[in-house]
Length: 450
Image (cartoon, rainbow, N blue to C red; front, side):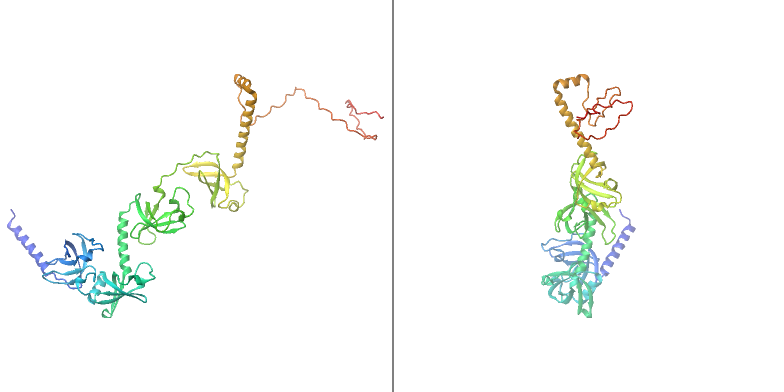
């Protein structure tokens, strides 16, 4: 059972609280904050610290389909339109949105400007440089530059529409009221962007819309104005020369978030997106060192050229171009030129080719093919008996490389050269060289005159 002192303290506390609530009165036009405690058929009730909850027209929270945008427990900020001790204060989150609230005067617009509370007005007509808007009983003006976040060429499309604005200026006792729809749109966009960013996680997939296409990639809007870049290298596993060949503006895509990087400019971090990460990588082609491939020069660098082949893109270093030192390889190997390359190395996806070694590799291959052909022909000429003898004696078939011919034995007799047929001479024969002493004169040296 509670002690007497406890009851006394509780009663004192409750009395003080009730006194505060009774004493609190709201000034018309002031901005108050509270929590939604009940949602009725026509009104939304808000606890703002008064003895009776404040009332806001339910229509202020409904969209065109009648769906509510708030729920019990939500904190809101509103402006006091009227204050009755019995019925409680009448509040509004957007002046002029509901006709049941009565007219909107200049003092309310001034309070809306100070508090940042939006106002709702009906566009009466498009005038030079902007829109004429009726907010309650006050005529206001919205400059063309403040109608939207983007430039609008034809403002007549807004005539007759009920739009929400921010009050940015009230002068001359309400005769000059300037509104801005752009300010509200940017505030909403910022809030939406913060909501979207809070849900992003690296490695997850998100749906978006392609906003712009550049030479280096495409920008995708993930919602709330949050955009990320798909670099051209992240569009596909194969090389992409033109981004337009893969994506187009307005196209809906599903991308994977690769990274969130601090922003160098602007309020939002940089988002790196990828289409390639969501695609299954094709099986890597089998590459063999010494394999000759036909490809196309795809890129020129200060240290060599890159060549695209059916088995991948690789670098031909300057030393492997097979050109004289000092020659301008940029002119000799322009982008798009078809070349033959031979694989030198493949390490961790990095492929190194050579152009200068192609001729040597092809020569060796041609010789091997020729030797194999000759060897096959020789084996076929030997017949079954020759093959059996070759097998019995353990002879090996000819090798691919040429076998050097052994020099002739010094003791082997060298066949004498066959004399050429004697030349027919005239009666005046040419003088004949005398024989060298010790040597027998060659046959037919002396001729008889006829």
